[in-house]
Structure formats: C-alpha cells, structure tokens
Image (cartoon, rainbow, N blue to C red):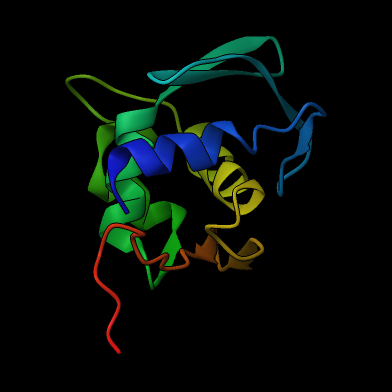
Amino acid sequence: MLFEEFIHTILSHIPRAPLNNPGGGTSTIVHFNEEQIIYRRGKSNIPLKMKKLYEAYERFQGSFVTTRALKKFDNSFDSSARAPSGHSCNCTFSFMILIEAGLADSIVRKGRCYGTNFISKPSDNKKKSL
C-alpha cells in the first residue's frame, strides 16, 4: 500500500467517539491531518506521526505484532527509549486506529503485552494476475 493510500484510508476512518483502550480508559482524537494524529489519553495530548504509523504497518503487515515489537521497531512507540523517546500509549493507540481502518484485527493480551494481526492489503496500483 502506498503512503498516500494509507493516509486516505486512516483519515477516512477516524472515529468521532473516544476509543476504549484495552488496558482501561479512553483515547480521544483531538486533531488530525496528513502528518499526525493527536489524541488525549488522561490529561495528556499525545502525537502520533502518520509516517511512523505507516512504517510500522508496512513492516508488520501480514503478521501478528505486539507492543513489545513496536517498541523495538521505533522509539515513537517507547516512552523509555533514548534520543528521542516517544510514548508507549502509541502502541495500543496505533492498534486501535488500524482496527478502525480495517487494517488490523482485534487486540489480544499476550502475557505482559498486547498484540494484533496487521492485515495485508494489496495496493490498487499493482497489476492483478489473471
């Protein structure tokens, strides 16, 4: 899936209602555009860059991915990372956004992590075999 297709898919499925986090509480989207989604978790506004979400989707599409794997993949998903750190809530929030867009399955608990299947979506621009 091309980046432009991904952005269109995500932005056309942004929920108006708060999302229920798997560990409790909610995340409410307060602003979004083609560069980022800003959501409120508790009293904090947290940004998630669309490019980082796309890179994670591209890397893990077609497989089961855990919050631990996302943190290892990119600092954007890890509040304890160094230079620069991101936010751990970006893991489950990313899962929820991808589910809304039809690009992931439901979130499950795997030990101390959460995880989901990132669904592969063929690009409309690729030639289909006969």
